[in-house]
Image (cartoon, rainbow, N blue to C red):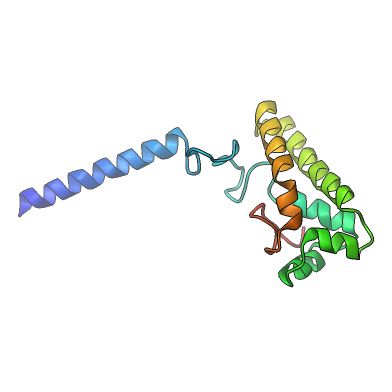
Length: 150
């Protein structure tokens, strides 16, 4: 009985050490197909420079506060639909969102939180995903994060 307990404890310890090493080596979200910024963030909420920036910039461009924008998104509207209803262009909306991300990335590079190469990768990823974000009906849009009140 003691031998079985020791074996179980030893296996559990090895699994724990292996998991800790895996997290230290790359962290969660570093698997095949993960975006270049996966697993790297400043506050655990999203990638540095991207978290909240697209939606905050969208709200500003559309002349809405973030609560109003979130309410319309929760009602099932896409950002593209909201832009048209506000008399704005979808192209202008995309440009504003990219500019918001770029501004945050520049600040993150200047603060030393990420490298210029990481910033370039995150900006490219955002540019690749902008159409999906603008046309998504999910509240906040495609998992880029949306925090009201800022």
